[in-house]
Image (tube, rainbow, N blue to C red):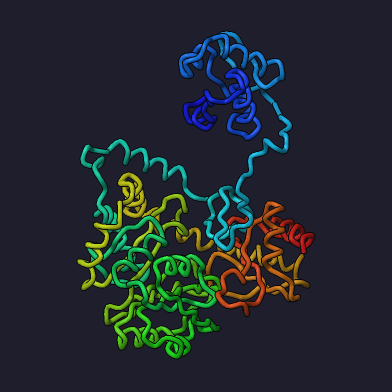
Length: 473
């Protein structure tokens, strides 16, 4: 048994009336029943536990004898003592350990396992892991003592330079490496922005519907959130001006509105930029999956149209590589670099240098651009296959909306049934997905399912999963 598992077993109570051998027995039995100790796990020898607890050897032997007699543990001589393989203990109701019910957590439901239709995940099955492993090994071998110091809170200089070069070509953004700040994800990016250019009591436009963590984080920082409706052209700028003309910022997803996957029209982009310039307000452009557009080439970023230095551009590696990297980046106007450096010194710890080095090599050697191109073709195929498969099974009950890009489908429920209830049933059945009503601030949201398609490998798979959903409706 590892030291970590030993610490998860509660200590003995010298003041209790229960004898020590029985306390030891109860604690091991509870650890086995709750899963802290699993079948086949090795437990400390009687000699080792005697030394660790400072008890008589006979006390430990008595506890182990009782555990062995009831079938909880198995002595293997010199090979040590283990939890009995294949053991499936019956847990008395009073001994059951209540685990948190992650299915109740909405809308930010992110299961630890990979589930069908799980939002926010790229095609992990086709990530070039061999290339990544080779680069990782090479970067690790090349590490010097200077690479083992505290990482720069702004980001690895080489990575900032590669990001700047990539954005110039792929997203039409002209910026210097000094304008780029590497963060640990979108939430960190938004927190950095809020500390640098906003304050408690300010008001910020957000899209309605929109990404829930944006509202939650701003609310925690005592910043007022103004829900601005979205139509077929994206955020309705006129509605935002009417509701809060003097707002200090607007958070938008211009490439593919999150979650409706609509693109912000050129007229709306210009109107938003004009409002920000007049009001000296900030536009936070969350370009979380701008690379994945299927009806034409990816649209230039809103930042590329910014002539007044009002756009703060947020990008991420989570959607194009994989989420566990915990790497994202922020591009700030040249005149704000010093302010963001000051705030980063206070609130940022820096991302692991080795991870940043691997990403740098991945970009520099061309793997990043090739991977995005490959995924763009793959996602177009998987989107079509997933939509066709689900439509063939669920067409009578829902309508799949046509979108120019993105990584998920929006399935509008034809009947006025609860999307939250259906999503809860799906989670119980081992399927993922999110309810559109959870992305609304107002209660007027139309029920729909948000289902990711990037990990659905064929139409047949989509049909099979659609049949499971049908049974839950």
